[in-house]
Every structure is written in structure tokens, then in C-alpha cells.
Image (cartoon, rainbow, N blue to C red; front, side, top):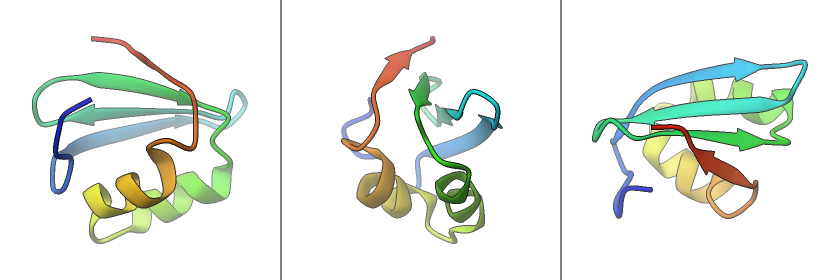
Length: 68
């Protein structure tokens, strides 16, 4: 993942059935996080500072795979 993600989140997608959150960063990297509850996704989508929310609530809390 990027060394600094603050302000670096470009887009997010969520598959509620699979609890899979895909995050694309400004550097073009795309990562899939699994086991992310819908409430966490909703809070992330509504967060004014997505980079800060990512660092506090997602990074290190859910397993992930790099997609691109």
C-alpha cells in the first residue's frame, strides 16, 4: 500500500454479499479488503477524510490482496 494514504484514496467499491471493500489509491494501486462490515463501509464512504479513516479503521484490521 502507499506509504502515506492521507488524501490518497481515489475511489471505493463495496460488495455487501461478500463483505469485500475495494479501494483504489491515487498512485493507481487497487486493494481488496475482506470481512469488512457494511457499517464500516458506510462510515468510510461518508468520511470527509478518507485517508485518515482508512488508517484508523481499515488498515491493519482486515486482510487484503493487491489487485493492480
